[in-house]
Length: 88
Image 1 (cartoon, rainbow, N blue to C red):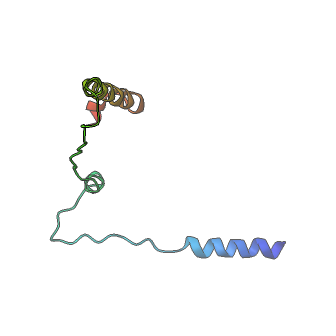
Image 2 (cartoon, helix red, strand yellow):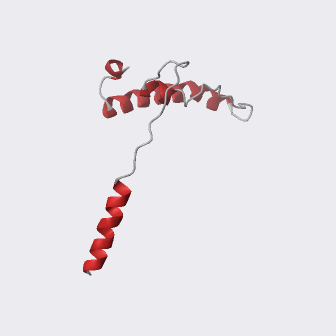
Image 3 (cartoon, rainbow, N blue to C red):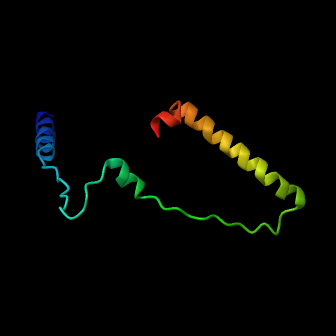
């Protein structure tokens, strides 16, 4: 049992001593903040949908559903962070 503990300690010591690889920033590109790097992962898209299959009443409901989604988004921000304008 003692040799098992010794083997585990040796493995931990070996794996904890590795060097961290640092990103090199070329002098040609301006340095980006972490937020800018995260934002660059996202792209803008235009959503389209075929509304031909909807009835007139269903088409009238769409703006109401969008308003409800906007309100839910505001509530999410409020619960998750508080005042989102102070963050943004």
